[in-house]
Image 1 (cartoon, rainbow, N blue to C red):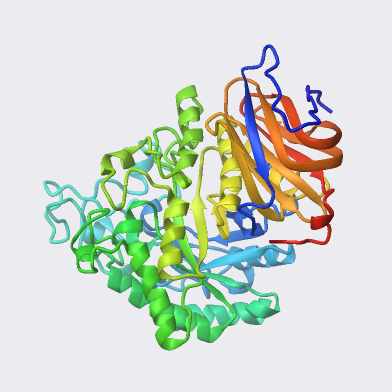
Image 2: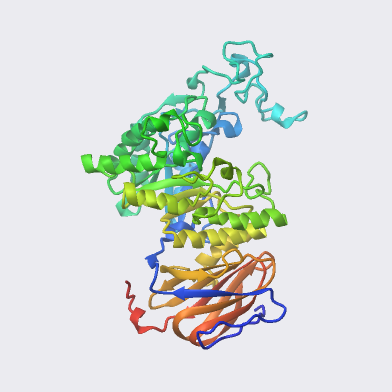
Amino acid sequence: MRTALFVLMLSCGIGHSIQGFAATIGVSVDISSDRHPISPDILGVSGAPDLDQLAYPLVRWGGNSTTRYNWQADVHNTASDWFFMNIPDGNGTPASSSTEALIAAVIAAGSRPLVTLSTIGWVPKPVQQKRWGYSVLKYGVQTMTECSYFGSNPPSWCTADAGNGRCNPAQNQTMYCNAAGYIVDNDPLDTSDVATPQTATAWMAHLQQRFGSANSGGIRYYALDNEPMLWNSTHRDVHPQPLTYDEIWQRTVEYATAIKVRDPAAKVFGPVTWGYCDLFGSAADNCLDGVDRAAHGGTPFVKWYLQQVCSYQASHGIRLVDYLDLHYYPQGDGVVDFSDPPNGSETAAASARRLRSLKELYDPDWDSESWLSDLGNTTPWHYSRPQLLRRVRAWIDESCPGTGLAITEYNWGSDNGASSALAQAEALAIFARERVDVAARWVAPASGSLVERAFRLFLDFDGAGGRIEGFSTRAISADIDSLGAYAVHAPGQRMMLLLFNKATTTTTAAINLGRSFNGAWKLYQFTGTSNLAQVGAGTINGAAINLSGLPARSASLLVLPESDVIYANGFDF
């Protein structure tokens, strides 16, 4: 066990800084305030994690390629991510598909799968061969092909005829090349066949036959496609027109109704936004404001969508959407960059900006350190101040109470970035405090990576299955920019305090617990250079404790014994 200095205070007084340490920061806890249950589904990921290594409670099957997926032939379309190309998987049968293998593994592990169902109206052709949306032979010269992407030494498997759908009007004089440099009026049937809601529910029926219905151990969560407000760019070979408020709601009605008929116990996620802009406007608008939003009373898109959900339920007795599903990525320079293999910078400036950017999730006074700040702080929307979770929670409470809140794509940096791991851990604590119901990181961190430590802190902090679970309660740090503090109470079991030292120097946390605790405590911790491990232990008989020497850029978990008879049997307020 690594050694560290921990000073136990037996009164409610605040301890003093110890010479050599940068600061002493007060933390106050109130177990009876801001109390609500934590959903384990916030600890989810996307992709195909090794659930034997870490049992993520939820695994999302989603992303651009799931918008067009043919379950019968096991073929997906890569869309704009890779030359609008159909890619065959497995041997062309559902039984051997990687998708169903993932679902089977998730269910077998006792986790929940979140499955994306296509609503775009197209599926890849049911043939086990590559096909592409923008043929050079058919539509003319384009600015890049699958082979030219690799430069002068392309691999043997690339297809020189597969273009990127972009053209130079001076070089391409065909009717398909417009003045803006895009291939237009291409034939969607080059790659895809028409699909309907029944196409989606036919797959549901197959999955129910294999895994059971939502109430009998099968799939319970279904998402209405992936980021539809980007279809006119990501899937423009089949949906070139920008989506509007009315079109996405019409698709919601058609597909969610079919889902609920097929499995009434299923929970539907929508509208699956791509980011900040489509909180406020449709793809037909100019990010925030436009003619489509004006035609809908100037109401932000997500708020309007929620109004439709509850209005439909009042009129028809059916709740079509159970979870408001949003995607969110911090936009500050160096925080997240998927075009760069490291996926974000770990320079001193980018690391500090990454940790500050967490305030975009909740702080109504925080101006984003990104292009979002250029949007302005005018009333009533205060665009430059995202406060994402509190903003949309207010919209839910006002427009459609009872709707769950899901963040099914987000990312705060690279798998092996020290500040990224710390940001990931604090993001999970923020999700718990701010009453998020479901969350899934894009994508699952690599086994053994630094970011995996952040999830392990919540899912297996002691190496014996110890989880952070129970009720989120009030914890206030006197300096949240340096030390984040979050309290979790598991009635009858333990009290837990998460501490995130974001400073570049060691810190002392002077903690007032608000009531007396008696018994043994333990401290678990990870840093950018050390694995998650127990680093301290002792006994407490009082209401205050000083934890000295919390390392720079570290995440710590203080586990205290439950010693109050009021909570011994799970008493809740």
